[in-house]
Length: 203
Image (tube, rainbow, N blue to C red):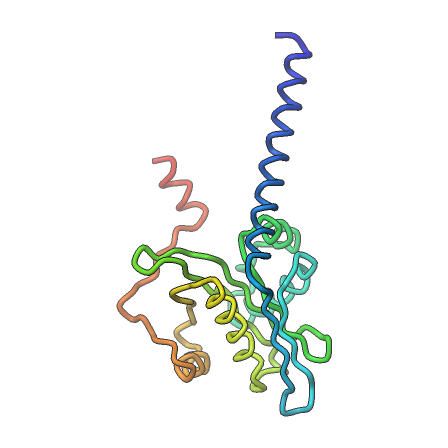
């Protein structure tokens, strides 16, 4: 095999990778445009204007900053491994959706969620994070973001929206129960971390 053959194969492989990435991005954009965008605008009791809009790749630094604050609130500040670049790339590849809550143009909260599938009920959404900055809580911003996620889910015909809460976060439990969310005590969460994944995969 001569050098030309090797270089041709390399170019062909690179083009294939590029085409795969381009197709994934195109598919993601087509999924996004299939449904009308969700946007919520409300006036808070404080007289401030709240907007909950669709997140974009350009929000990766904003989301990352709030993810770190959320991890600190949940007493696990060292757990955050993702970077703003990870969030940007993964958003562009369609791995998750996001909503950004803004008061008078300043970001005060975010929701991050992604599609999952129930073999019992079909299309569903998992809400990974719902976070409001501490000095912006108790104003209805969390509810507005949940409203955004549920409108998003309803437009896509989802059967359920699911999320988790830490056992000690009683205020969150009470909030979720007030809006009609049901606890699922009969289900126990299991997880494999990176080491566990590699161990099982190589067994």
